[in-house]
Image (cartoon, rainbow, N blue to C red; front, side, top):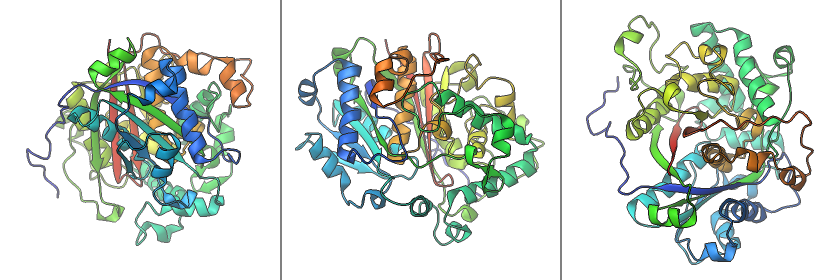
Length: 452
């Protein structure tokens, strides 16, 4: 049984405010042979500087004074210290930099590290750049590399496939909580559909529920449309202190709260404990709960990260006080688990978040309007940054600028749908991005707020 001391539950606090001023993305593809990783990172960085800030790259380079790089695995690109190659390719040498590798949470944790550099006074302008080169190996080999982020002494024996790890959790979740199987399919349906209205996404499609449920099974009960895909692409964002932020834009977005939680790499080593209550929860809510926590269906790391971020940001009811959320929906089941871990619904009732309509555009807390990982992308080192950038554009009221403009669709060789729909949330002020690694070994939560 784990118990927390007062120091363990200390709420994070920045020494000075941190703002995000711009974000940029490439599109995401299964194969991207025409561009090297350095070129993809350059494209994302130039998008942030030129289209986000309206600046010449040469002028911006004179402001940057530290960089953070985000890549999941050296294996894919067969290049150790790849961040140095990207750093050189972007022309940022001799500035200091650091590279982070935290599994699927790499992009989110890298964003927190960039914020820490600004908040501490180490730097005043920090580009955070993430990428993954996942198209130089076979899908089978790529899945094996990704599966190495789970415990090789335990989970790997289940087949070197993350889908299998989550399929086991999904079966347990269905057994314990009894949601309709169609509810999980609705998560995939929603995210694939929203991906149709973005020029960046990889798996845009309109599915019926029957098509999702009757698609080929990857690992029972998960079907192909309920799983993320291997992606190649890059993402970038720029963090600044207050003075620099307002010099670059009159509409910076403030990083209001952050949290990082961890758990054992081997899921069987995870110990039960009393539920760590979020600000919108009480002990009475779980008095009748019969299953242990976190058990095999919840992620203690996600709950801990949300606890930190909510308290730092002053959030007491996330569904009412946030305007949008980007969750790490690597699989339909990991999405519904996250709804409960971060308090969108109490444990055991995650299905209500979808069935109530809250998770859809026009609902109380639209989730994964980007398409998420299921519909959008999972270029692992870029993923958490992609999520933050999408939330940033929503809060700035710039979703249409970066998604509706025909030039972006043409740039990526795509045709804008004739039934295109704007997914801009009216007057969005706050958003949250959740980045998740392994079978919940690392999770980051980042809360953004309009800073002007």
